[in-house]
Amino acid sequence: MASDGLQRTALDHLWLHFTQMGAYTDPAELQVIVRGDGCHLEDAGGKRYLDALAGLFCVNIGYGFGAEMGEAAAAQMRELPFAINWTFAHPRSIELAAAVTELAPGDLNRAFFVSGGSEATEAAWKLAREYHRVRGERRWKAIARRVAYHGTTLGALSLTGCTELRTPFEPLVPDVLHVSNTNRYHRPPEETEEEFTRFLLDELEATIVQAGPETVAMVILEPVQNAGGAFTPPAGYFEGVRALCDEHGILLCADEVITGFGRTGHWFASERYDIRPDLVTSAKGLSSAYAAIGAVLATDRVMEPFSKPGAMYTHGMTFGGHPVQAAVALKNIEIMRRERIVEHVHETEADFRATLAQLLELPIVGDLRGCGFFYALELVKDKETRAGFSDAECDELLRGFVSPQLFERGLICRADDRGDPVVQISPPLVAGQAEFDQIAGTLGAVLAEAGDRMRITA
Ligand SMILES: Cc1ncc(COP(=O)(O)O)c(C=O)c1O
Image 1: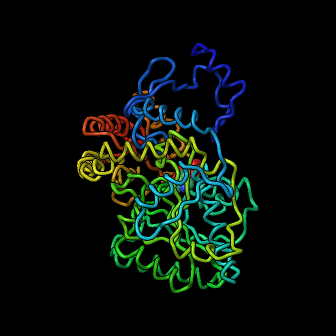
Image 2 (image 1 turned 90 degrees about the vertical axis):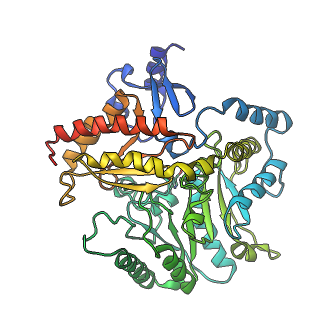
Image 3 (image 1 turned 90 degrees about the horizontal axis):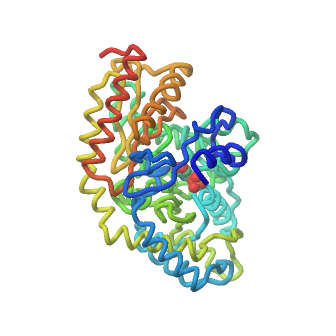
């Protein structure tokens, strides 16, 4: 179908996610992406983009391995296109479980496969509830963080701390409590890192106590929180969270849907921050988004009560651990190892950060945060006071200027205001200095102009 035919048909029949469908007045406004290579995408009109968002934090190996991945998928389809993981097993899910648990830190020795990140979140919360039940306790509540995104199915959405995503669907699954995230930028300037950690841990402890510790099944946290803009943990934070969970018998789940598979320069960010989680959720980078597969990883301690005769995790989905998806994920791990992709992130993260740090010279850029290949720039009205923008100004700045301008200039980043306004930068993990420079160059030009338009002066 020709480009204009595709655009017309899309507007007639395709329902885009998180999209105001009525906003398209002319089919030509809809970008149709038709191919990719390396860190680049191309639309139906032949325009090329540098994808500094890796799809949506997921195409970790970039777009250049389609032939090899396709071979793996085709071979699996010829051999066994489908087998279920309910009671039976098949070779690829077994091999993938072994490969993923070998890469995971500590004794996360068990893998339960699902089809994506939201399903992984659901599965983790249900697993935590049932873990306590099979041990004779009734615990169901969960604690998550404000502005954090854990997915959109009703359970996952209940954990998600983004008000505007939750409100249309209330009432949600009850008994989720939200605590502060690790956003340090808007804390009092005189507060030390140690004091900040203390504040966060005191609040978490008070929340557990308020909920009734014997009713709390799980605390779920991303190692580096994406929504709000790449919040890294302050020193001692995860050590304290682990200690509180241990004290109160609560399972700690690290949501590694984004951070897993190399984004922070480690196979899992739990290793980087020594989180020692009981559960890990994974999706996106597990297959570098070449297949729809996710996983929940569990430690020996979590598995132990389920290994007893008569015990079962009462959960399953037809496509969980699908052989073709598993074959693709296995090939992804093989490619990541062979191409030394995690090592590449580790070795070049300082260069990437230094390149992006040049943007801090712009009056509109207040903060650069993140690690590995996972960064956010916070946009401010006044750097001195760290004052942000009103909702109307945010709208004008992000949706009215930054997003369309970046796209126009061939750079895909995400301008996001689920928390304070940020530009998220998270390229494929094969990006190098040429891509770092292009990202910083285009962002610099657009943000300088954005600052002028908003009349922001140094
Ligand atoms: C941290 C985190 N958890 C869970 C999810 C949900 O994943 P999915 O979109 O695959 O359902 C996302 C998606 O962006 C995420 O970023």
